[in-house]
Length: 370
Image 1 (cartoon, rainbow, N blue to C red):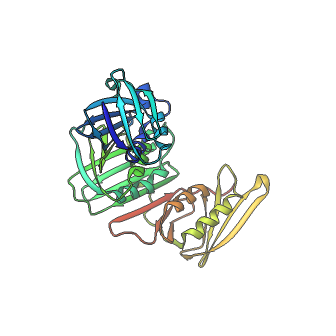
Image 2: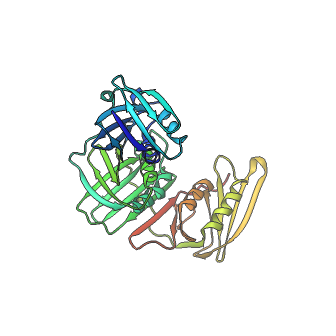
Image 3: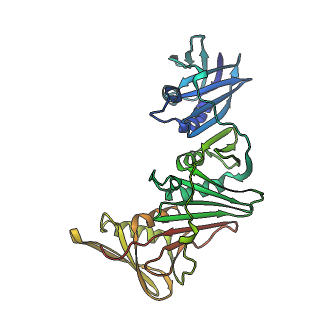
């Protein structure tokens, strides 16, 4: 087998595919890319069994062929080369030779037969969405997933398809995010839980605006866009009933500048108790006082921030780290903080949203005291 390809084009697709390669795989073959050349198209496959990535690049080939090539050494070689055509040849003993304008690089390939087969798209339901909407859904929720393997469902993002709406939901029991896309035209009603690692790979693989075909069955979800397909094995678990924790009646509302609130939180959090990260928000008509103290070290800090507050004055405690994570993901200049009582969850929402989008971020309070 012998083919020629642009080093830059090849590297671009390999960078996408490398996301599914784990440093310590279950099988040694999964440290490789599978190269399959058919009719001047090179199909590159990588997998860690949880996530599989299949992507394509045009090549000039004199024959078809298939080989598994160690990923690390191939990636490092191409990264170190400037843009140029490279020729890759494979002999009958699986010896791989890369020919560039600078010289020749030889490595040993592996048998393609040992490479795991990617999951098949059978019995799937399908819908299509713009990549920026999916990207927004992932960015807004993936940070709120849990890392506790004992709560398997919460380590992923729940995708609920409800005919005209699609909800992205993530929670770790301290914070919860729900991002809804409307105007969906589908006859599907399904719930799926997707691992966060796979979703991050999907998010990072979008280099430009495109339409994404999403197909799924009981075991896997398939994201197809451009010349790339990312397949994620679904988490087989029951997602907790989350809607009950979202307070419906929130008579107290503070509106403030997001960046000012975030900057203030970061400074005040330095003085908070390191185990609780608790900051107190004291809300009155025109201002919010943010304070923290760590009695163990006699550390204390207070700042005052402009805000429009409606409702009875109140003081509520939150984990500064969780609040800061949410504020960092939100995009609008101003945000609303909606509250009911100091012992119930606070809700953060952007002041402006697209007509077909709805974002709600919920954070549980930290009880008063240190």
